[in-house]
Length: 122
Ligand SMILES: [Zn+2]
Picture 1 (tube, rainbow, N blue to C red):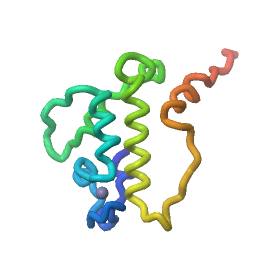
Picture 2 (cartoon, protein in one colour):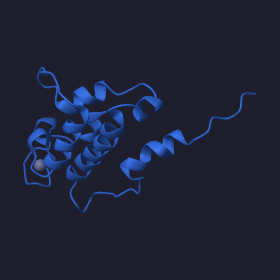
Picture 3 (cartoon, rainbow, N blue to C red):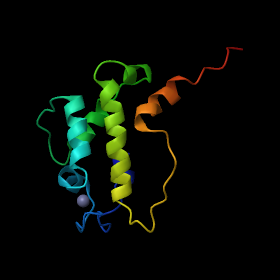
């Protein structure tokens, strides 16, 4: 998932860094405030083996159901994660080529998902 999100190493970050890589976004000045919010919401992260980054660890711990996203720390972690991923997407594309897509606010994305009712059993 992240491999597709991060453009390739020829892509610059909007901060001016020459390579918009997963390692870069751990330290990118333009992402730090959102990353800090995410790490505070998720809680302690164990020592990771390179090239795994904190975002990878959090993605690997995602609940397997939408209901799980409404419980405990995921109530705040999930919107914070969406903020970070959307910003990485934006930062990885030049302003002239970035196609803004209207999406629900991260805080509302979960409501949009969980409010979809299942079709009746036939
Ligand atoms: Zn950057």
